[in-house]
Length: 269
Length: 363
Image (tube, rainbow over all chains, first blue to last red; front, side, top):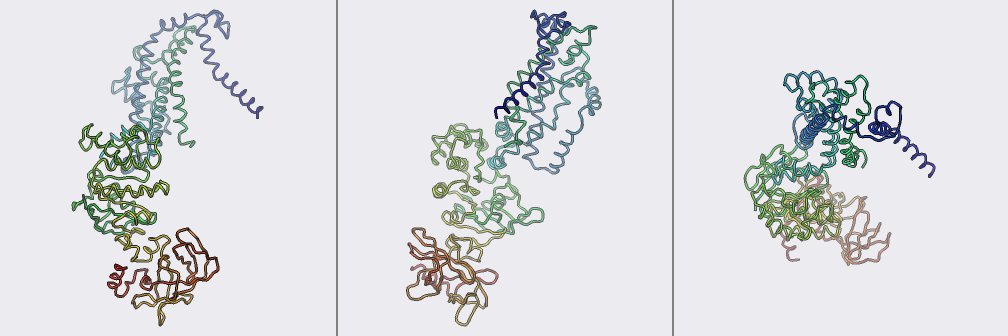
């Protein structure tokens, strides 16, 4: 029994080290000056914060961070609102072809997002939304995964609660707002965190629809920083990387428990 | 107070008919029980009255007005669900008042009504709690409070006591009955438990397989079951039934035991029914002898099991009888208490019913 534990924990520690190494190394590089990076040191001899200052000076990092934050929050709100309303309709409202429409919803999950990129781009372009937060966020509002996740949750709400509210004369929206949403906090948090993180880390789409510094998001900024100069100053790049990981880490720590509960809901009982 | 009228109400799902034409009028202020085995359509019936289920054909009238197409909230009724359907994230007070705003009540009036309902049901100390912090019986009371706080003249209940233990159930039975009388509610109460229906209802309707078996006062169903289904559903233990043949001097079971029921009929074969408590120990006039197969001494009464023409019969004798299995007992049955059912299972009315009814009054 103890031997097994020793083996398990050894493996776990090893995996943790492997997983964390890139982040730890990036953090360590961000504190070195250029010559030390090139020597291949693992740990900085002289800790310096110059790279962080340089990161803000060399590219408009604040603008990028702000853009990313606005876009991620917009997508998060959009996805949660649309998914929860759609899921409510799928669970509590009777209409013809409900099963078929839900199947279609799920079928869209099987279409890779990249395949829809060209039509999406043309739509955004003709709407004149290039280089705007709308172009970056609106195409992601409808999310089949979110609808599915919330539908599964809403289905666990006893239908009698809905019927009781019908008899009491409570409107559908009020029932949705005052009963369904409060009892579904966990999956709503899960979905919010998921939305925020995926949007924050998005690269390809922002690259397509933005070409000005005012509109770009952080992920593009990093890439730009790395490729703009002939010889990358890795210390500065890593400093910027560490800076943009911070919001996602904060979100993860805050929502970790809810996230686990939400993603395994229904799987274990 | 509102009356409810059902006129040839039917319900089908696709091609399966689950309610096959129900006609009944529930009087204003009446406690009406809908009884039947599970799957008989009693809950569907209730949900159609509530407006949660559409009516396939027929007319539902509430206080004389056709209500088929009214929304649930427009039918002036409240409903208590089997699983209570409380809102888990709201306090008891919020649970009771949620929805009152639709009646145009101010916050103050809502609170007053809530306090009054809580007072009636003994919930005053629990108003700030969440449903999960309450016991089963208290949750049940919250569900009741939520129904009465609306002051709707009609109250529907769908097996409200089935999640409670036996002791609490008996207590809530009388509480619900008193509440209904006090508030003069027209109550429709669905249950599969015939004891609940017998003890609470002014009138009851027994359903089986979507068809009405009998409607009437509980004692009518008990004393004069319209058919063998009613006879075997009502009463605990149920009525003893056995097939009999007409002979020259009476009716005989397949094992040759002879009965003289007070009924005239042209039929040659029939089903004979006697309630267990109507089989009494014989003093002189022995109706039949029986060999005991089983004995259950319950303190106040003794249940005796024996064979009657291939069917197990039960007799319920008051008191404690020191008998043993295999012993022979002499039984007496009053002929006028014997029921006869024809080959279709329908009751054959006894001869001179009026005279016997008159005699029953004197007894």
